[in-house]
Image 1 (cartoon, rainbow, N blue to C red):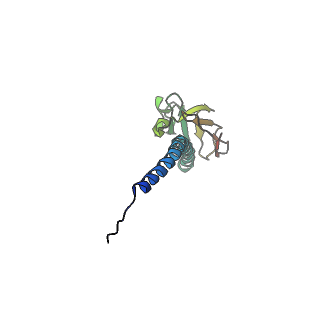
Image 2: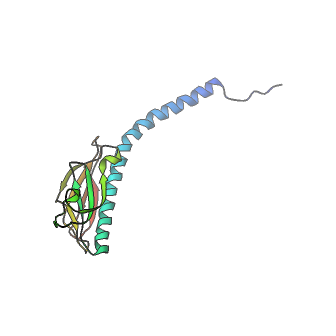
Image 3: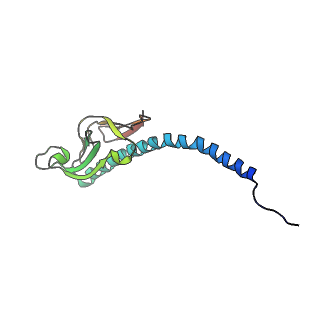
Length: 158
């Protein structure tokens, strides 16, 4: 007597149908989740870069600034305002330590508004109040990153 082992065609068809149904549910959810994840990652990076800029200002006992360039969807971290003593970013003579382009997040992440001018951290970590709003091209979520006079940085989902 011979023993046949393996899967029947019916068992294989049932497994393929189950995988197809699960994929039909999971793929659209993943497609909707990915831009929100990239936006949250961008907002967390902004907050992290602002904290690092504040720490660098205290560490070097000088002023550091973050210049938001909404036209080019980028921001620049500067350690020196240059000879003109104006925080004007790379268009002036500031010393740019780091530039971050929001387009690198590949989800249409962009600034919706920036209020308060350049963000300047003093040698004690204190700063002016700046409010930065970011969203993605699908407008599926929005985040606000806000500084306080004492140098605190608050991030909230809108």
